[in-house]
Image (cartoon, rainbow, N blue to C red; front, side, top):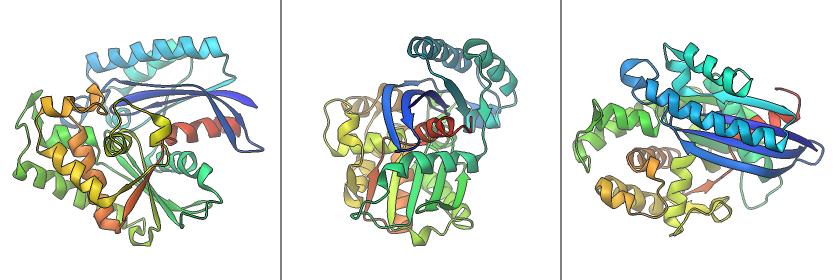
Length: 318
């Protein structure tokens, strides 16, 4: 067994996994898995820069994670940064801060690399299951981007496109920090849907979406929808992991999220406070994907890019 630490820093959240892994058996044993909403991508779509307060929130989480990594004694650490830091003009300040705190340089990976990690993390446990057909389409809906990966035993095609719950919210529902309409109304929902449709056309140019046999959904928007579908009073990762949410239920939840106020969404027990403003857009991304690929359900995975990063450490790719 090899003890590794993986950090996934996205547009909306930063997550840590410390785990013992056995490359020979494919076993992954969690020692610590945690997440904080830091909104690193706050305003990036509008300004092109990481906001000082967003950087400080992220660095505070990094200091907490550094203490956990030291306590558990990870042999290898890999820090992967995704869409927001890839887009920002002042990403050097982000890199310097992470190196000072954690002693490792964040890898600002490409969308294709994101897709590879997501696929490995999401499908490693699905190998050999007879109740799920292949190829899988793994869809990782992040804050700033969404990755599409099609494959079975290995990746056949992958594409990252710039749609995500934070990016869509900030582009269509917020201006200068102020909410434009709550609930958003049909016109703004239609504008988000048009952006998603254009992005799906872009993804389909590389990934044959119509070949999807099983849709596997990853990341916070998807797991939150699963938690709502399961009517969980509090978040339960074991109940959510590998749950299957029918298309009709995703449509019902999406309609509800897009027609309720901030206060009403905040009252839903399964919705993390940091996702209240962005979960409607995230749900619409998932629903539009399901309708586009003809998926009758989405298989929800709690194991995603974070687990893929950990496996890369175990195989000596870090």
